[in-house]
Image (cartoon, rainbow, N blue to C red):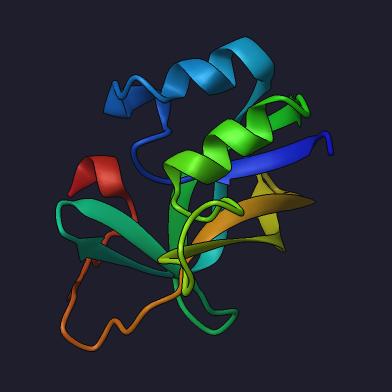
Length: 128
């Protein structure tokens, strides 16, 4: 399943996380992108909740993500077939804006209760 992926936290280049290497090896950077949603602080890492009526969350778009990268990324995000249910994150396809161009891409969405979590008002994990 090759495709595009929107990343908004530890997988972004500026986060300097070792898992970013998976994208560098198996995908093509396509620049800055934004999606409607809310960004929360979850135990020191970000969680995105998609919401078409919310503000914008900033991230990066990666295209041509190779098939072999998806199981690694799913495992990192805790939503692989081996991970116990219910998953903390789910991978879903959504619409986003890539420099004025509408794009469909996969995103890891936070799937738990956010009522006690801190909201990242800027929508940009790296600028918080």
